[in-house]
Length: 374
Image (cartoon, rainbow, N blue to C red; front, side, top):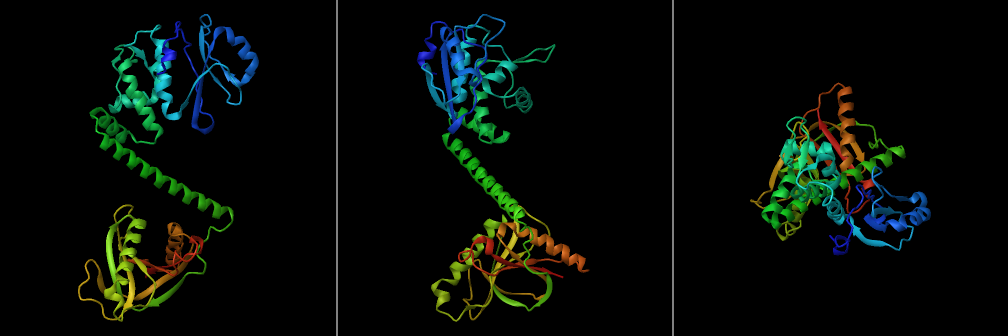
């Protein structure tokens, strides 16, 4: 809290201060004396918000939030969004120090101080995240203490950062114990979750854009049945999230094929890289996937983590998907539907072939052959 505000002789501040988020994530606070209020209201007209307690005489000082396009000679300070809750709390405590019993704050007033809704405070009470200091045994009304405000403000900040309740509890425990390493790890984990969510939303945006351009159908040719011969492949298999695991396994295979031991032999790659999906259902985090590439020639007898094998051939329903890999599930759905409509029951494992290189073409031009055994 700024010292110049705490040293104001008359601390009879107004009961309410409306603080709104404005441009560039900056919140501006203004303090005006009573003698300036009439001229101020004339000057800023409807562009300022001045909330007074109408049951009492006008306060000597009032907190005003003014449109940033207007000048004010009595601006006190500017704050970034991260400082908002703490400063607003301090302003309010200045008011409370002369107007209420500090160790019995009603839930409504505590809600205004911490920017946590009463509904949220009741939920936090039920979960043990923030319980009131006392409850009225007749009405069940909740009361809080001044010492709980810091915890409430921290919870509000973490909610704004998108933390789930369980992680908020972990962060508060880490802060209480002074475990800065744990706090940094929790913040980094949340940052990764936010990045993943941003990418998911970008994918949705791309899909909506394609729909707008009437490009929703991404199977560029009619599905068909085709017979495939058994293939001798170099293979590596693991479990994990689809995109990350497939990328990692392809990198491992390419690294091996580019090693001196292979370059000095007669080994040749005879077809596109493929992914084989061994699960009979969608698995979000522990998908069983295998990446393989058809090869000919003599390979080393022992390759750590990599297998030389023959994958079976047979009859497959086939379709070509055009577009980003993350959207391929739509084409898979269409191919499954087409296969069933042709009187066949799809089997496993399904596989797909990557017909061009993402390093050479735009993702909108990527071609993937989808294969379902029947």
